Image (cartoon, rainbow, N blue to C red):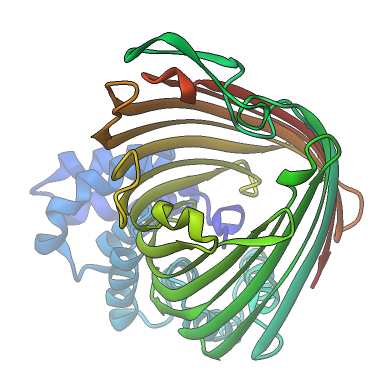
Length: 445
């Protein structure tokens, strides 16, 4: 929840604390410098300056108020809450300390405590300005609380577009191989093919709240695609998930199970089952990071494809940052690692991949936003090819961009473009691909 639009200005707070310097005559330098930095709005610098003095001066309401404010504004809400509690222990009627303590509870995702402090402050008949600020906070807190223990949502999405490489294959029909002076001729089904396509996707989720810190979730998605020129590569993909979510102040832990079924050209082709876990932490009002791991077993249904079965072990990490006055812009950076454990001596053996992705979304108007993403992936296999006399290596660059036109709160039109370029030391796996599409998305809340 964004608390910055309603904060007490740093300059006002520094004026309220104008008598702090004479109290600490022995160390006027750091305190005077902190006041100047606070007046300039440099709260991170104030926090860095006052942190080493906390043990010596904690317990003095004037120091704790300035230190707590700097801690809160620099993303250290837990430290700030302790400082404001020290102020209120000695000055229970201090409105600034109680207001900022309530704000700290908001950042720490403790709405009940935040509401209690806001209502206590209202009962003390504060100034009209503070009353207005509290009213905005309480309104935001009320809207953020689930109206019911069970929340249901769903979506329906249909799109159409053009895919330059439906098969995800090389454009070369003749491939040179070291063991034979003759070139290897690939069948048409293994060579790049372009086609228009249509998709129809739908899904739903349920979120059941046991209390403010514990919830269960479940969901399912079904995705289908048909290609007008490559009929045998149409697919139907169904996936499900369920698990538990636990909140710990400004941290959360989620764990669950997953399953999927992939049908190709109307026939069952691959199934999966697994489990995943994710830890997420909010470091500041607008900065969030997460780390996670997963295990998924992939099994192929046709007997001829059993040699492609594998187990996937994965790990990921990400950090995201909101920008703009209302946090309407977003930038994210993510990293992934995966290890495919070959189960039946497939031709390329095991696989390790490493990928990174930078993405962002920018709100152009109240109803139009733009997004873009850029990524890189490296994949290395373990078994040397007897045909190409090399161990397979792949390097892949990819990007995506598009617009979201929110026609109504529930209906969005999304034109988009994706591009992918993969190079490999075995030419059979070199290819490029771009996809342009226009989708129509409806949310059911």
